[in-house]
Structures are given as structure tokens and as C-alpha cells.
Length: 367
Ligand code: SAM
Ligand code: SF4
Image (cartoon, rainbow, N blue to C red):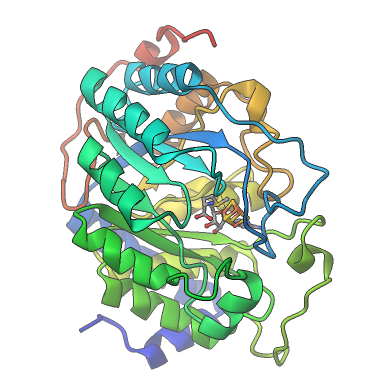
């Protein structure tokens, strides 16, 4: 049974009194400390391709956005990023991309196999809705985790903003269940404040996280991108204005906190999208509201700006070493510590003392 009912969740999602919200964040923070400890896990993000065959109505990488120059990283570039992740002390690399058909099953398999052979890193894939046989192949090559947000549990809204490519393709909830049976640590998640998304459907999203028994749960604000139908107002899903959930940071902190209470031992990132709408404090406030993961960007500088899911993304001008130092500084300022190992679900850690200078001395890989 979830710790909160749909009615409790709905009340909290509509709450706006600062003192009440503060008490919610403190409760979530205490649950976080009790169940996953004070470690904040660093997952190095490599955005390996911006090509995508889909037409998601919210995303700047959608195929119809012809104004965006596309890139695909080479194997050597990806492997260099993985080596850099290990050198920077991360426990995981996350390879993320649009649904790019030229990232063939064998091509990805070889990279996964190489990273698992040459490093101690956990490998997370986030490559969209791929064939079951491909997902199985990558799992057999050693991939540990798969991230696939279901974006909203409102099936009608999902189909509107995320058109199917074929009439028979499985939905993302079905794929998440499949991934679990394959032995992946499985991550889902949602955007908050999608046009047409109600408070009620957000409450339902949290119950869906619990029902799916997700290992990782990513929650970020919807950020309008002018080159997309949802961001430009070209698509306006119908909803009564009083039901529309706002896409603001407070709503995201509430969602993170409630998710932590309902799914106490899940890994929950304080997302880049949150850091984008509050560049000064967004990440830290997410960590204080129940999150325990951050995702420093390892994508080579020449590609970062081109992975434009939404505009003005945080951390596009920083180098990998800058991101590393900045995030570690934020983690320490909260009295917490950076996790050392892969940081899978349920793996609590105790702090290891490292001199702050160590990070600035790390050698950078030249790409
Ligand atoms: N293509 C893969 C997929 O769709 O799962 C992975 C890459 S996709 C860019 C990763 C996530 O970005 C999506 O699951 C979605 O939640 C998020 N995203 C896309 N457009 C967004 C927007 N306009 N605002 C906030 N998040 C967005
Ligand atoms: Fe492609 Fe993923 Fe963006 Fe959809 S959300 S357009 S699948 S990159």
C-alpha cells in the first residue's frame, strides 16, 4: 500500500502555504535519509545522438524540427567520455539519445560490452522505445539500467503528445514492465505542467511509480520549446484552467517530495530541467526535497548546444570538469557526500573522506 492515498496526494499537490510545504519537504528529506542515506550519486550523462525518428509534441529533438543541426557521436568519443567518467569518480554512465535508427543494436552492444570490460562503471541506457530483442541483447552485454519516462499516466494526453509510430507498438508502461522482467534496474518518470495535465493525473503518476515498483524516477518541469507544437501553442490539449497543473519549480519540488514518501528507496534525480528553470538553486532544492541523484554532463562541448530538448538548458557552456566540481560543491554545501560506487537501488553508502583539491587535479581526456 502506498504511504499516501490519491486524496492525500491531491491535497498536497494543491497546497500553497509555505509553512506546510516546508514541512512536506522536511518529511521527504527525513524519509530520504532513512532509506537511501546521505550519498548523492553522480551519473555521468553522455548525449550520444540527437537524431530522432519520433514526433513528440514537446521535444526539440523531434524529427520535424528541421532547424536543428543533428549529430551522432563516434564510438571513440563515447568511450573517451566513459573513461573520463571513471576518472572523475562517477559510478555510472548514462547513454541517452533520440530514437536514432542508426544506433544499431550491435553498435550499442559493442559499446556496452567495452565499457563493462574496461571500467567499473554501471551502464544506463536511455535510447527510447526499442525492440524487445535489442533491449535483451544490451542487457546480455552487461547494461545495468534503462530509463524510459512515461511522461504522464494520462493515456489520452500521452497519445496526443506522443504519437505512435505504428498502431501496434507497446506503450511505455508495457515496455517498463518488460524491462523489469529482463533484469534491468528500471527508470520511469514524468514531466510536470504539460499543457492538458491535471493535478489529478499527477497524483495518479505517483501511484503509478509505486505500482510499477520503479528503481529510478525522473521528475522535471515541462519547458516550452518554440519549435514544437506544445511549446508554440500549435497544440492546446483541452483542460479546465483550474485543473491545469503549473510547470513551475514548486510543483516539481512537491512531486519529488511526495514521490520520495511513496517510493522511499527509489533513486530520484534532481534533474537538469529543474536546474534550468532555477539556475541558482534548483538542483540543491530538489536534493533537499527528497532527491539523491545528480547527472553531470559529459557530452563533448561541441555537441552540447545541439542536444536541445528545450531552450536555455543548464550547464551547456561548462566543461565536464566544471560540472563535476560545481555539483560536488553543491552536494558538500548540503552536508551530504558524493556516492563512490554504482549506487544501485538499495545500496546505502557511508562517506569517504576526499580532499576537495583532488577533483581539480583530475586529468581531462582530450576529444
Ligand atoms: N528519446 C529518449 C526518450 O524519449 O525516452 C530519451 C531522450 S528524451 C530527450 C529524454 C526526456 O526528455 C524525455 O523522456 C522527456 O521527459 C524529456 N523532455 C523532452 N522534451 C522536454 C521538454 N520540452 N521539457 C522538459 N522535458 C522534456
Ligand atoms: Fe525523440 Fe525522445 Fe525527444 Fe521523443 S522525447 S522526440 S523520442 S528524443
